[in-house]
Length: 188
Image 1: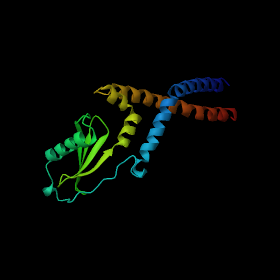
Image 2: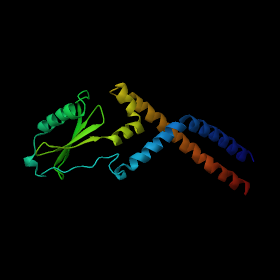
Image 3: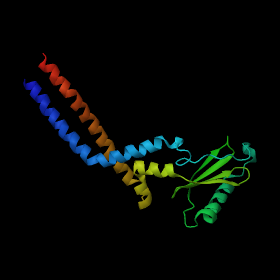
Image 4: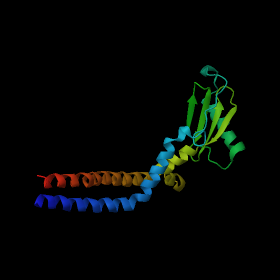
């Protein structure tokens, strides 16, 4: 009977830990689950979260403009057509050879410009909503708006929630398994 009592004491201890951790992190887990669900559906959002990729005039890369020229076109378009106050720092140039298009994604805001790679014509100016939701999801939005370059908030946030989820998983397992152990011991 003392073994059953020991299992019961341990179960109460796991229940207390499980309750406290889940109470402290409930809002964050709810937030991560919600944004994760939205991100999972981004390709099926009919262009609201993920912009359609437009097609350029040719897929022949030998006829494409240089990346330097395409970058200059994107920065000029950002300044003239979108907002001259937005940062022109480019995060990446996403080349789509099968579409004859290059997408210029900016670093410090959620804008991107799709450009015909051979003519330099602007195909589409997009608001990158999925990137914004992704930064909400992983906590890096705080680092972006606070100007932190080495992402201390994101690291702390994901570490705290990762450890919290591990604790909930382990304690949840024991909360499920220990009553079965007790029932089994009582039937012996």
